[in-house]
Structures are given as C-alpha cells and as structure tokens.
Image (cartoon, rainbow, N blue to C red; front, top):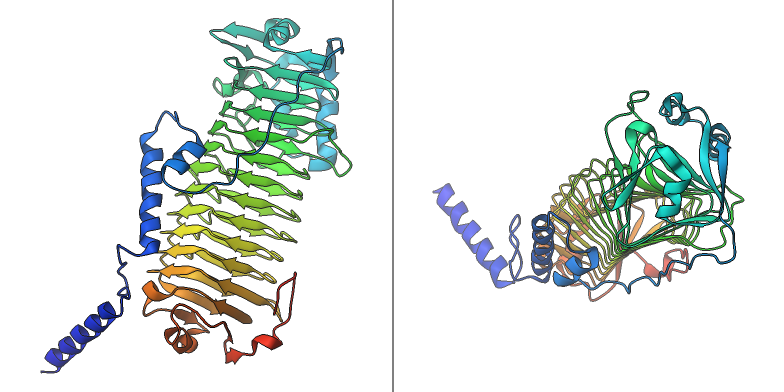
Length: 500
C-alpha cells in the first residue's frame, strides 16, 4: 500500500512538472532553446569528424552549423621591402640562444645545440633583403634538398632584424627533425598560402628535439591561408612549435597574425609579452599540449578558430598578467580538462560567443581574473561544470547557453571579500544543478531562464535559497543572494564599472 501511494504521488508530480513546461531532472526537453543549440553543436562536431582531410576552414564549418561569427580579421601581409639588397652570412647559434635565455630561461637550449650533431655552432642567417624559397635554396647549399613542390631544410636558419623570408602560394618548406632544423625569426617571416612542416625521424643526437618556428625580438610573423604541422618540443614558450615571444623592451614595427590556416600536431602556439596579435579563422587539431597559451600579453584577439582532435589539457590558456584579451566565436570540441582557462589575468578579459562542448573537465574557468566578462557562449555537455568562477573580482556572466553539463551550469567559489558576481540572461537547461556556490560572497541574478533546470535550481551554500528562483523562474526581477539569504542590491559594492 505505501508503494502504491508513493507511485501515485510520483505520477502526480511528473504530471505537474510536464504541465508547467519544465524539464524533468535528468531529462532534457528536446524542443527547448538550449537543446536546439546542443543539436547545432552536435552537427558541427559531426561535420568536423567527417572532414578528415580538413578540406573546409574553421569559419565555413561553424557558419554551416548556424553559428554567428565575429567579422573576419583585416589581415594582409605587408609587401616585400624594396631597394634592400639581399645579404646573407653566418651567425653563432650559441649567441642567438643566449639572447632567448636572457628573457625566457635556459631550459631546452642544450637539446637544440645537441641536435646540431657535428655541424658546429655556426648557422646560416639572412642579414638583409627579402628572400623567397629559391633564394633560400641557394643560401643553404647542401643543407637544403629540393623536393617535389618544396624544399627540405637540413640546418637551422636565423632571420635577422630588417630581413625577410617569404614563402608563397603552393610552396612548401620542410624542416628536418633528424638534422636539427628550425627557423628563428628576428625579422619578418611571411607564409602566404604556403606549407611549413616538420619532417623526418628523431635526431640521432637528441631524441627530444623537434623543429620549431619562433618569432622574437622585434620580429613579425604573417601567416595566412597556410598549412603548418608537426612542430615543437619541450615545456617552454621558446620551442613550443609556433611562437611569438618578446622581451620587455621589444617593439616590432608591425603587428603579427595567424589567419585562415590549418595547424596540426604542433606542441602549441605560444604568445608571450606580445601586443595586438591576431589569431583568426584557423583550424587547429591534435595539439601536443594546450593548443594556445597567452602570457603577459596585451590586446590579443583570438576569433573564429576551431580547436578539435586530440587535446590532453586545456585548449586555450590566458595567463599571468595578460590584459585586454578577446576570445570570440571559437569552437572547442572535446578534449581533457577545462576548455578555456583564464588565470591570473588582471583586467577585462572577454570570452564571447564561443562553443565549448564535451570536455572531460569544465567548459570555461576564471581563476583570479579581474573584471572578466563571459558572454553569449554555448557551454554544452561537459563532464564537470559549465562555467567556473574562482577567486575572481567582478566577474560578469551573461547570455550564455548552459546545457547538459554534468555538474553545475555555473559554479562560483572562493570569492574575495566584497566580490559581486553578476549572472544575467543565461539559459540553464538540464545541468547537474543550475547555479552552485561555495563561499561565493554576493551573487546578483537577473533574467536567467531556469525553466528547463527544474528542480535543481541552486546548490551548495545557496541551495536553501532555491525558493527565490522557483517563485520567478525566468528572473524578471533582479535578486541578490549570499549564503545567508537576500542581499540589498543597493548595498552591493561596484567594481570595474559595474553598477551595484
């Protein structure tokens, strides 16, 4: 008899939930806005998986799946310098590596030197003028081997400040791993419709070494419509694969960019102490570490890139003093750990309109980030939280679609005294919980749609305040809460231009 009464009560409860148009716990309404966006992300993931040859670019795939994208970056390689005579020579590699060590440490320099075998420390350098692939073949002599449609470099190459190497449409430059080849650019490197890749087996003199392309000093890197693959080794920014890294006093004459290119099997793209770098419309797959790491940099724009394939850690990291970073319209599909990590970034990082799907960790995480805005993202099907906010002053989360994340759609914890986290106009649909907190200080909620999040609206130390959500499930009236209950909105402190 008790079992019959319980069954009847459960049936009445289910009927009431369905009549109210809410999702049952653990079940998602297939016609909800959140689930429609989830289906769009699944279509994108299927299209990427089907395109094994990477015939389609990042923007084309995301647009076809129905996602709005930021405008394409206005990037055009600077024309070749005129009037400068071509001059070449040799340079002591130990001096070049020593210059890198002054700014970025000595780690892995020994591996680069060991990979040179019996060649000695003298390497080829472009001193002035603009060289093409044919010029490079003449410069390198027996250290360059022509092949079908390309050239294999079998020794390091340094581009001096004021000089340029330009590789054009249909041309290919291969860097031989077992000969210790790499490109160290203090001048200008232009890859326009070209292919650049690491080739060959391990160096017999250092198995760790792999080819890399590093732009440093006042050098500039212009990459558009290129294919780059199989670069990078070690744990430093210097030799990570494709790097733009500066010292504190380096001031390049022009900005650098990486656009509309296909990048595969590199250790990572590293950006350090750079300003105004643009990374737009690239398809980046099977990174050996974090696909993109930004450190100590200003005003980096990362837009409309597609990151997929093997991913053993975070896809994008913005770290250690980087400011004014914009991550917009990127798609991050599957992989380990948090998709986008913003950590120790002091001011005004913007994370807008990105797709983060099926990560083994959380989707987006702010950790000690000041005045960050996370807006309009599609954070769907991740094995942990959707968006995490930890130790971050004045975070603003608005307009995000948070669907079917195993833990909370939004998690806020460990906040500094006086912090106010603004959570506005988000859609929470079939997550493990809607918003969960632990020592979150004040949470300001407005316009959030919990309709499909029934009954787990709130969890953690806000769990007992769920009645406030239940009474206004679409958040028509703003409300501020902390672990103790309601907080007067007028009493909230203002940070970073927030209105309390």
